[in-house]
Length: 300
Length: 277
Image (tube, rainbow over all chains, first blue to last red; front, side, top):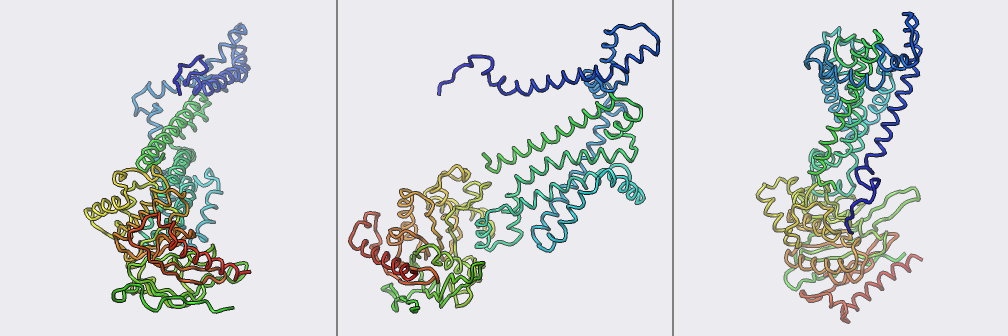
């Protein structure tokens, strides 16, 4: 096939790839601005009237774009507040969003690690014993039916009474949420080998341990990464939720809490952006490891 | 119901001293219950295979040829009868790694390179690194796949993959090679080619081969003995010796001798079918 230069801009591969996404983003931003004007309008107008200063429509319009405590902050307000709280302070200052993100990130990662390990161990037990499958599976499913928002304070109080504070209780709540997709995914992964492959192992009289390490484990790698991607976002949510009832003084959850106490909507939103950035970065990281692992394992 | 005929030759086919029996099956039966009732997968099967023989099992599907192979491999247990494999019980033979098994599908491990696939049984059996490497080289060259060590299975054609799985089955030097329709999924040209290669391999290694097929020419071309089986119940209805010269090529399939044996196999298969109706 002849390689021809794209005839029109629309045919350009970059345009073809990114134009739809960009259009959606621009449309959302536009809707957001309109919504910001509509939602903040009466707030700003009331402000002018309270101070009894004469105002024009254009003053109100301008006001909706940079109100101090808007109902809905405009996108540029969130962006500048986010950038300011990320770059405006030394990374470990209590007002730096970097600091708070790191606090939440450490609880997330520890919880993710604990949860993923626990999930894998559970999956192993379930795959190797029918009895355990019948006795464990209902409890595993039940565990996810209780809202974590209700459980978190109980965990915090009980663990606090045991002398555990700070990082570990948060991580345990995060692990409690994220072990589930890993356990379910890995059960599926461990039973994914082809019956022929299992029979081959039998003809070589492989030990159960060899069957696990040389067949079941490598066969379950695609399932592992799929469930880890789900688990890592859930563990971030778990860590943030765990910061709410503790009245933690640091972390993204703490920023959300204090933002809502004091009506600091801009702070609320920038904490939200930080959480989104964090979870996207974590998923991207796992995606990267997945691709590298896949390359080594002959994926095509 | 006529008693299933036992056509095991009284005299060993070999012209020298009687050879050691690698498979000795005495009235093997296997029944299992399904939702549709009791199925007699094997009924009173007697079979003796001497060292170095190439024995093919042929018959329509459901005749128990694969089941017989699986029973010998201790992948399934017979309901009754006695079975000795390489002088041991079937389970003992499996635990002693006395046989290599080749399935219809290559069943390579997709995340391992060709080299690593060949090493898998060797790793499991605890061979040293050096020994593993030497055997990979030896058996890859035996199936003409030298140079493909670092490829992944998906980069090879179906025929090449099946050659890897044959090399894998031979890599730990088992006494017996069990092959369950190994070329059944391949096209005829590749199949012919692999038949010639397998014949060479059998001659150079001197292995005892048990080979399940549903192709008459394939069975006649490869075997020293052909076991014709029939379904419901699965049983042996004829055992045919064929002793074509060791140096034979695919052209032998046009000779009258070849066609005569093929005709006898076909008659056997037909008899088995009419018995059904």
